[in-house]
Image 1: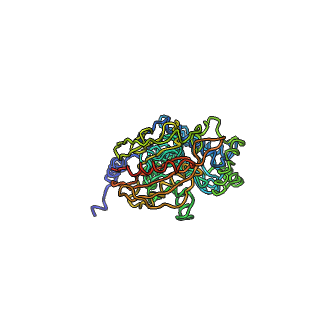
Image 2: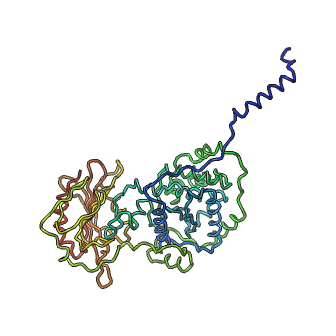
Length: 487
């Protein structure tokens, strides 16, 4: 009976106590803040310059919608809205362009340029889904994933071309080490699952601060995975699922203060409808057009190329070099030894050396310009995955060389070779020499030898000469190979 006589004053006291302890039970929610992106070995200016260089390649390789297009202007307006929520001291000179490609894809280039395929705009059901893709790409730039990729890239010693740059950081070689590859009608980025998880998390914060529901980003990725599976668009290959995106983003945002998110806009509806009427090309068509120089011309005529974009880097053949005769490069019968941390090698004493153990050049002085090697050898150390066989590693070496040198062809298959008791792989490539005669590049022959290292990875050598002189130099190259000692 006593419980039934529980007084009004007692109930009021308990209610007051509950109100008093509520702040301790349910702490106030605070909005998310963008993380510190950390540091990289590349400065901000270096990343911006590499980004401008890569952008120049995009305009040669792909059809880009002109600046005056309503779709481009809409994408740029969204990009500006997202950029405004990033602190100025951590922002980048973002610029947003639309690629006239059917396939679903988007990619970010170091320093700020972001490209979104027409197919991606068409595939988005809401503005928030499209914003999710853009915020995700902006996060790759914000977190400097490409620059960090360069520091840990697999092919750290890859030069910009067989007859290309001696300095590994110049030319397209620097872009490849940042995980940027051009080819097959697309630009391929190589991000780890850790990078993807981070871009999801940071992208969610950007979306939230701009007023969009972060869940839409995960919804779009999940929709693509369900629709296409493992054989999906390049977008899914470039952006591997770091795990359960839905669950991860839900966990990320669950403690953020609630807000009324922006609904899909009429501007999105108009832009999506406009995108449906744009002439878009398949990846195969784009690759073919790039070979014919179609897109560079079209982009110039349409005014698609930004006025402040600098001229792109020299073509894959490297800098032109005046005619060099065999008599100028004839190797001496006397040899000296180069002793580096990873290897030793003997070479003719009238040739010169340069570089480091990760990328070393031996060449006649008259056959070397500031950016090209016409005769000699390039020796490169390259890590490989522990599961890679020597044959797989050789394919990776050849693919990496070809990806940076259009027109380089494999002459026959790889064969076994033994050098100082080490079994390796040997094959020949053909391409264009930097040496010009009568306005034309001489044909070039390149001998590639891939050898395993005891501590893992491989060392590969590329012996270079114009086709006309290769047979005369081959005995010297074989003697150099036999003298090689890996450590």
